[in-house]
Every structure is written in C-alpha cells, then in structure tokens.
Image (tube, rainbow, N blue to C red):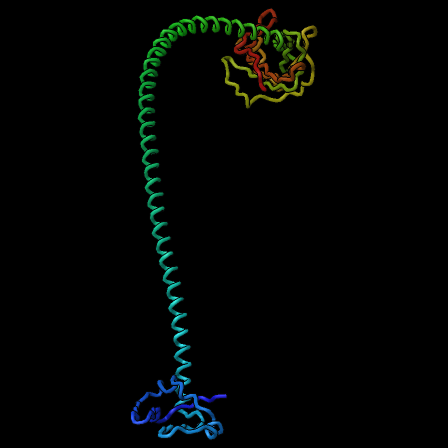
Length: 341
C-alpha cells in the first residue's frame, strides 16, 4: 500500500554519488510536478526504517497530514469547474440543435414562400387565361346577338308586312262577319221577344159599362189574359176622378183594393166591378149623363206568373164617356204590361 503525500517543500535529494564525480543537482519543482513525480510515492515509515540509506542523499519526507480548508476549496472548485464545463457543453449542444431547427424552419419558410409565389403566379395565369376566354366568348356572343338582332329585325319587317296584309283581310272579314252576326243577333232578339211574348202573361182590360147605383158610380169591366200562362192577381190599387178635363192622378193617391187573390187564365176571363165611394149630387150625375163631365179611372194590377214565379204589373189610365145610348166609350191614355221583379 502506498499513500499519496502532498509535498510542501522543495525536494533536495537525488544526488548521485559515483566517487569523485559526485555532484549535487538542485531542482525547484512546482507542486503539480511533485504530484506527477514518481518519487512522491514513498513507502511507509516502517518500510523506510528497514532500508539502507544512501550516503550523502538528503530526502525530505512529508508526514501524512489531513486535508486543509484550502485543499477542500480547491477540490470543490475543480468539481464545480467540471460540472460547469459539462453544463456549458450541453448548452452548446442545445444551442447547436436550436440553431439547426431555426435554420430548417427558415429554409421551410423560404420553400413555402417560394411555393406560394409559384402557386399565386400559376393562379394568376389561370385567371388571365379564364378572363381572356370570357372576353372572347363575350365578343362572340355579342357578334351572334348582333347577327340575330339583324335577322330578327328583317324577320320582324317581313312579319309586320304579312300582318298588315292579313290585317286588311281580317278587317274586311270582320266587317262581313260582324254584319252577319248583327243580323243573327237581331233575328235572335226578335225570336227571343216573340218567345217571351208567347211565354209571358199579358193582361188586358175591357170596359163593359158605367152606370149608377144610387148616387154612386159603378164600373163593370172584364180582365183578360191574352196568353196561355196562368196568373194570380196579388195586388190592386186605383183611383176614380170626375172632371171635364184630364186631371193629374199620382200613384201615391191610388187606393188599395181588397179585390185580390184571384186567378186569370186565357180560357176564363174575369168579370169584375168597381164602385166609387164618392157620392154624386143631382147636377154631377146629370153632367156625367150629358157628357159635360168625364170619368177618369187609373189603376195598377200586380200579378204573378205561376210558371216562372216572376211578378209583373199591368197599369192603365182610361177616360170613360157616357154616351146618349147609354153605352160607355173608353179612351185609354196609357195601357202597359211591365215586369216589376
């Protein structure tokens, strides 16, 4: 076993004694050189005592001592230096890695930018080609539209000329057709009027006589239906006036009669009478007999068509003259059948 001794002094040994050629060699060594020197590995004390010392050799043996505070600090500083060196080396490696990653990223960005530029250039070229195609198509379309417009214009002129010619023919034909249709409509209306007359009831009154019952005047008349359509009298209003001239009798002055709800058919005329409520004096009666006064009778009959259900009116205004032979002469001022509803 050997122990490592730390030299604190200068070693003044290694004298070679070879007779007269003896000389002494002094060396001034540093502590680090002493650590590497093989003579620093000295034997223990018990081994040194058994050896034979060489005459004239001075060897300073350093006793085994403990580590001093400065030694510990130096050793700790060495360890820290090693650790720091290792950490610095690791940081250097990491820095190299990050630098490489940054370089790769920059290269990738440059590549992406180049690709994007190439893509944008290609897209722009495609858009230009597409725009050129659209412009060319638009020009062709405009040319075709112009040609079509010109052809349409020529066709329109031809069609217009044809329409004008056809229009003249159509107008002449329309006039002929209109004339023919007008004649047909006139004939249809005549047939319609005739049909209506044949299928609508038509009343007519005949005055039979005018005579006196006491101091009152009574008129005897016959109501006739001139058509085969049966009717029903549903309302009657009338007014009798005595005057030497024609009086004005308004419809609102007509008096309602209770002689209603009877039927009139062609085969069976109705013989009816109306008695004037006004009493006459002797002179008034004489004036009627002498034809100095006349009897004016205005009446309106409302009747219903029993086939169609329509309601019509028959109105008349008649002047009655008493003749000397006791006959009565009627002079109709108005006599009309009309539809009420």
